[in-house]
Image (cartoon, rainbow, N blue to C red; front, side, top):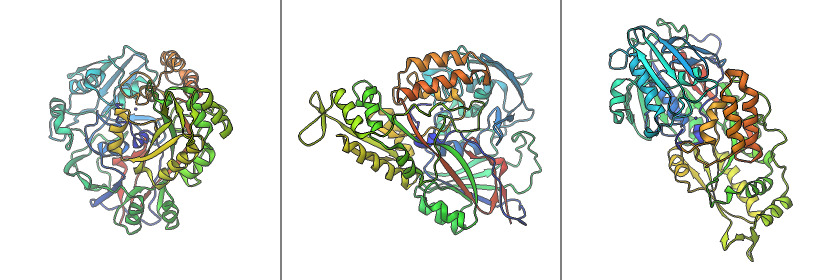
Length: 518
């Protein structure tokens, strides 16, 4: 799901659930302003160079995809009115009359240019391997309005993956600098003001006529303006909701109980949240599976999950967001080591990390000094959980420094490899979207090397759709066995809404679903 702009919020990249509400007797009103809280600044708005959920949410207002995913997880029309394909080829037929924000028509050739740009590893797109396989080739027939894609690497969900790529129009493709704090897309909204770290103002296009599925142009209740307010403090976000200064915000921590008590509509989305990663680059402590196992044994993962989710979490069954894709099944239970501090200490002894006079373990003259990062934008419980990790690992003989990171900072931290372990939740619903994070170089920010995973992925990729789910499950199990990632809790993440109704899909608000209430 991407360069090392993988962040905790990247995480929350791919989840879906229908949710509507607004109260009995409410009526829709045309126009008005819909204000959405963003937990972090979106940074660069170029949709081909981000995996941050806050940026993806902003880009959903500005850009469209070839196909849309409805709240039930099904493909519906987007820029394409129909599509077909298998594991190596895909073909899309564009809707008629689609125009870019500057009024110029979108062509099949422009769509093909997007796919070819992302597929070229030299461009370093964060979407490479997530939506487009390396080396994929696309051609556009402008007269017929069709885009044909061939992939050198089989992709079980090729039609859906390519269909999920944000499409940039011609000017933006020619000058990507225009996209960092601007936009050039076919989305329902255009960007009219960008104040980094504070707010982004979007204005609705009245000519927009190609919404998801059978969306109608005469829909009532659409906001004319959308304001995305950057609010990094969750308590502040909750207070803004309670005082009716904003319309929507995600609140993960304890303040959600107050908001539920006020009767606000809550759109609950279950997503991977507690995922522990070790930096597995050569020379790092986490490169040794024995160290990863010992440090995992030093943690009571159940307790850690309770702290992280304020007791509202659920035990994960898979690395995928539950119930939102074609593959299910339990790929985690029984594979993670149980809490056992004595075994953890013994494991570190066997790995050559011997306790020194001050209790800190040393190997080859080097102390077991670990820097642990956590996403500071995902609520106060993240810090509490990170401090619990610090306590447990200190008891096992490590010297642990805990640091918070914003979404933007995490891009740099994970890319540069200046970390030993971290909480980095990935929210994806297709197993193919995990592959860039666990193999290769680009998005593989933890430098994972797992031959059993790679072999299972190769076998699974040759099977179309749900036929490959069994092999994809084997691939996930290979990761968990080697503790390349330690998934210990899913969060039920409510997005609270007042003064409007809406739906969510793939972890963010669907722009065309927003209805303002009077």
